[in-house]
Length: 505
Image (cartoon, rainbow, N blue to C red; front, side, top):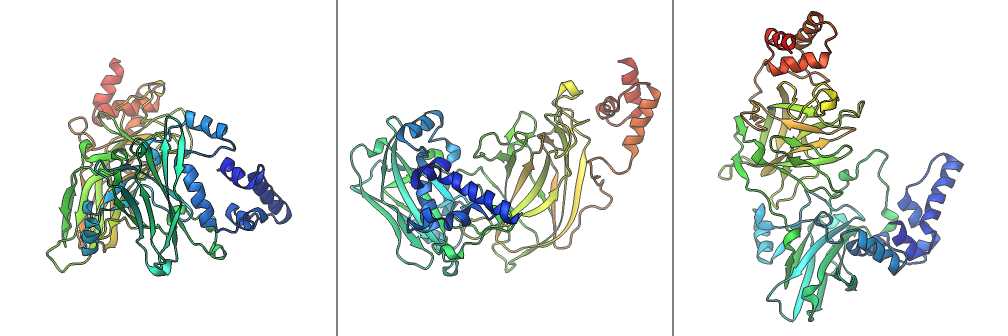
């Protein structure tokens, strides 16, 4: 962002923003946020535009990485970065994939496309980038129209910009930016005459949203996550063009399950039913030949479960009471040389989906695991581990009292990698792969009583396993605890068999 803003305001402008922050901290011990300092700067006020307009212009630069102070600077950046990398673009989906309302069907008939807000929701002053392509049978004129999908009280302005880009010559053709608001003040409609050669250029679209009244801008409170800000929702009507095949959301085949009014709902899992999400900064989770790898240290990553939960469509029931969750898992830790906290952990989340197929802003955390220690269940051979050195099976059980009011919902795993990553396995390995034996309980039904709980460090609370490790270490002088624990796991918890194996090795 720094070169782009220096290019607009003059060299050294961004440095002056940091200097203003430094002066504020020196004088009062409290600094203002960067956006407030930008809004109140003389250089910005001289432009006579709103913050939303400024960030819309920045969104246009984002499309082709045109951030350099000079053309040579921008060209050097583009040579070393892929402008068309799939992860840079927000996927588009049709209403037909999840919408069920009359409005959804009507907008579907107009070739309306929605950004996939579940992967990269648009927040204020952000930029959603979309990659499009001209239809093969396009006429003389093509058109893109943005429709806000928020209520009038939101007072949000949307700016939409289209850039034609030749990746060979790096030539850019920027069409005029169009604006619309949630109050219905005109449509953001980009119309252009199709010319020869445009079919060979890339069509890149930027959408930015926010308030045009800068006086209303209020920074987030300290500690508030950007995800807690309202999502800016919109639809795109495309005439003569369509989403590029590499930027279209294709959801996996979903298991459609009906939520019971009372009882237990068994959720199909297994390795083939998990789908890792593409991560914007690279890396991200993946499926190995036997388990789920959470990604790289320091990442937060998402894995979707190919299940769609729904309320009965032929019933007057408009909500469901979720009363519990239970599943079985095993784990192991990678990068185990990086000891200490924070370690990797994961969450099982339920995301409610509205009638138009949009995710609700706040997911429901069904279960949150403790941090995973670097040892003894580790991947690295140098620390006594192996790729299948999983922990014993852990039965995760939690009672809930949550009312589901949306017509449908989906499930996802969220991995928060700290200094290390992790691998997730399920029950009955190696006969089954990532079979979590996941069950949801509804309408007063409760998880099975007496299920083994987990301790803060991820071990059974009954203490028996630790006692068996101590017994082995006393029986065999100088035996390390991690080797004793590995022997117990390898022999199914049979202490006598573990002792015999250790004595004979």
